[in-house]
Image 1: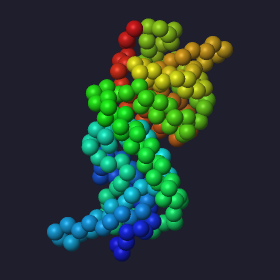
Image 2 (image 1 turned 30 degrees about the vertical axis):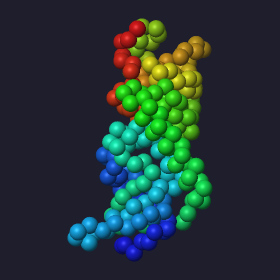
Image 3 (image 1 turned 90 degrees about the vertical axis):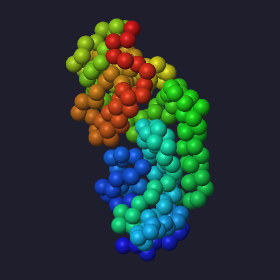
Image 4 (image 1 turned 120 degrees about the horizontal axis):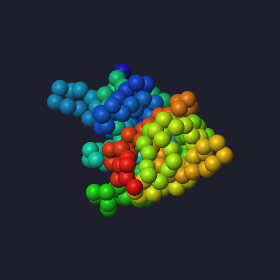
Length: 218
């Protein structure tokens, strides 16, 4: 344990939690050691600059929560016991490019201040298209006056169609041979792949906290 030096490539051990975002598991993330900090008792903290793979795997909800908490998304600070040596997965220029993408997302939020900017939903759309396996079956859990569905109905979600600044992400759903467009925040995956289930539920939880739409709106 310990013995890390600036420039070393390290991996966060499985199951480790990020101190920056409550209950955010950072196990498996990798990066390069930027510096070693010491407190008054001589205890070490390793400052890790995350690699491009880790940065691009961050969900928009994590970026948003980090911004809300005034935390830096680009680095982690962990005790030596939470990390281990690893092999590099990218080059320095890859890290620079990924960091710029994260910074642009934060700038969107800074400019908007109070509301979720429309362009931030585009980040969600891009992220879900990367990690979700389509089609998947979903249960309608919130309804609007514009659709014939009732809570408990099941539909097939085939794609993310668009991003709306009020209703959030709009999914293309099929009920038999009929196609509809329905807010993704009102759909709960059923029997979907684990990555799909996790990503969509994370989006729904985030939207319910920060989005504009409320169930029952006309």
